[in-house]
Length: 85
Image (cartoon, rainbow, N blue to C red; front, side, top):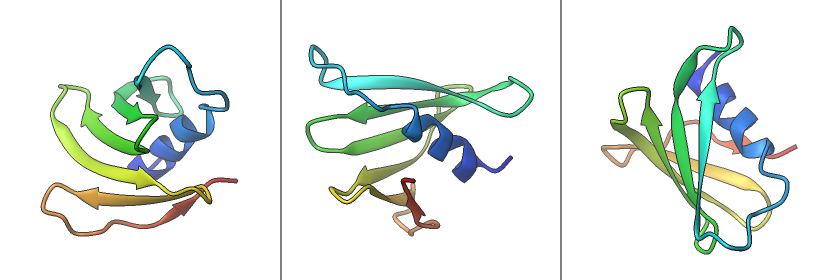
């Protein structure tokens, strides 16, 4: 399972945002239930920060109002685009 697939699974699991928090932490797992890292999502701005299992930041992104997720590497280059289903 690719990192993009893991991230999309995590994003799709956020059906209802938490009203009491500004940021939500989502644990990321692969198909074999191995922890791959986590993502923090700022619900006010739609910003996503992605971390590996050692808590090193590996990328970031923005959730657009139409559900599209724009993801970037740490050097600012764009990765593949994903769309919420």
